Amino acid sequence: RKEILKKVDWRTLIFFASLFVLMQSVYQTGFFQSVIDYSRMTTIPLIMTVSVVVSQFISNVPFVALFQPIIIQQGMSVQQILALAAGSTIAGNLTILGAASNVIVIQQAEKEGYTLSFWEFFRVGLPLTILNIIVFSLFLSF
Image (tube, rainbow, N blue to C red; front, side, top):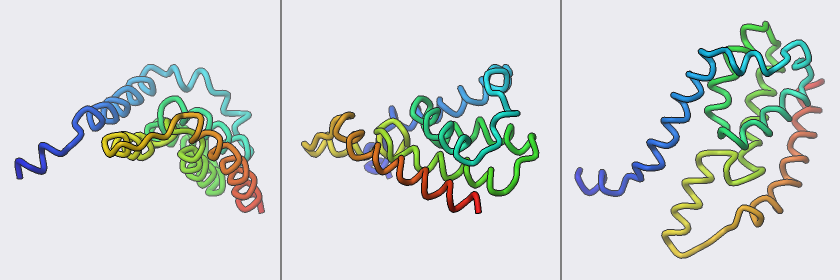
């Protein structure tokens, strides 16, 4: 049991747990709600794009935790909620910072002697992300 606890990457775990606390704080202050113009957040491509972009700064899962209550409160359709889910998932393809799992995998790879730079990841991730946004937008729009 102690061996397992020694192998846990506590710094990463605490970092991501802290992101959830921060997102709840941001939500409670009303800052995020005042910055986003919900009347314009109705199209599937826009919801997906905002999900992808914002997830690069706060990671995808904390972004969904922040945005989900707002999008449901606005009475959005199932397709729009799925656009949020798809966009936040696709966000992990764009950069290393887009998903917590990317950061964890990169850190583990570095411990094993492998490196993957931000730009190497981005060079592959950008075209994949654009393609995914197009495909999912078309799928959810019809």
